[in-house]
Image 1: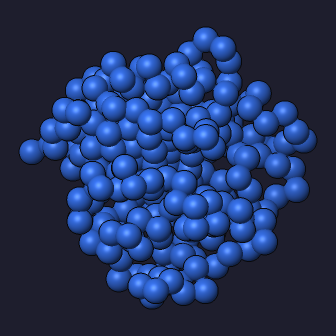
Image 2: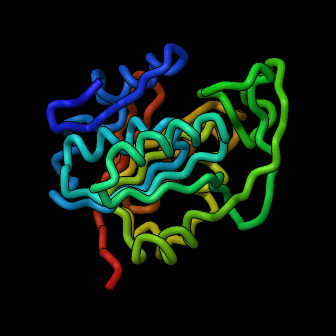
Length: 228
């Protein structure tokens, strides 16, 4: 299918729900968040899957530039296909995961293969029949320094439990460079790795935080200061 702006999308049956959630329900773009995102934003998409959110970002902000990270090979193949279908866009994609430090890690994913929404670096998030594969991992701070010029206007995270590792390890100074964020938070434990604990942490990092009913957490930076 094509959007009104001419973006071409492939939607396999197994990914119809995330497509609808992103494009129809605007899961990562409520009005209160979108009004803070500039006309030509720098967008980071962690857990990009097939690239639906990145495409949505280009749909609502045609002058955006996007950096999309997806470790599962089956998802990345679809992400590549979507990128090839819109070669005119400033869109960079990476077959990598994101965590607190650089290196390699084991990604747990469904045994049956194919596109999926449940691949995770956190082994106890999805207790179903799984296989594991080794993936390259990078920290968000390094990505912002090396790839985006140090700033991010719209950070989307859907990484099945790794969001806490990513965000709790990020230096306070780096938070000043993030204008808005939308995080799908999966409950991992009752201590720090849950939505309420993450919301409290982000408030300490000077974000106004909003909690959606569908487990998405939104943050708007009160002290955003772009790099450079």
